[in-house]
Image (cartoon, rainbow, N blue to C red; front, side):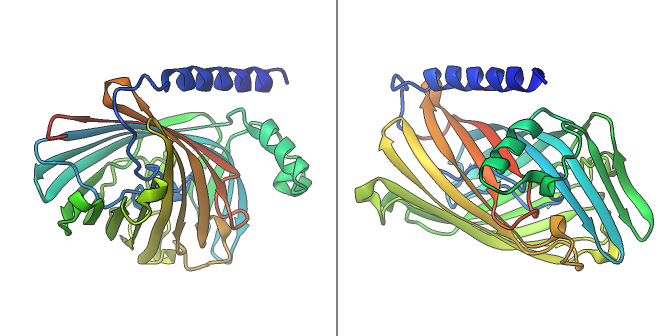
Length: 342
């Protein structure tokens, strides 16, 4: 039992060190962009719903590099006529994302993720929090803490059954963006963004969906409308096409809609406070199956401008529709631009 407090103390200690690093000695002002967030569910993250991005593309000749670590604690169970699932565990997803500006109006990029499933250590903290707010985790059943049990069956066939710690390369995401507006100097930007997810991750390890997905979306950023209050707005909306070669088979919705809406406020030149809402329509046609149904989650946190031109995001996500997303998700993101014009 003492392992959980010790683990929490280690996390708090690391966050304290990061806060010290984010002192106002940073050499540049903070820029507001969305949390580079995907859906935190261990099942949904295997599909190609792209991370949140806005309308600003990478300048010509510049390379934008991100290192993003997402962690989510899940307990979901569902039963539908043709599919059943139980998701009890923690999923960590570490992504290296690169964007290169080939021209003033075009960028291309690649995301390479590594997915790790384990029993984790957050169950005790989350159960205590949910008990305090009067909403017991697991409906008060008291399932074993810190266990890993991910299983999904469709038409009696098991797509994955994970009970031991698993680490695997995820599905690689290729991306492209075209700048549509010419208002960057006015603090506004709009871009058309496209992605193609390749089936490089093992489906049995829940590191990928087993299929190829493609998405198209419009994304925007507005740093001018509320500039007098130091607020930047951002958002995106689009659609994802899912092929029939995923573990959902013919139960999948071929087209899934998704969107992001958010804002950031810079009370200090080196720190921003951000909040965003991400949502998507069901991935499965059996919409009573909550992990693959309508999902809305809210993410809030901070961006710090660190020395050497590095920006750091710290975020926490919480589901809005009960059991459609993990109990809680965390993100640490680092972003730096190399070359190009300032």
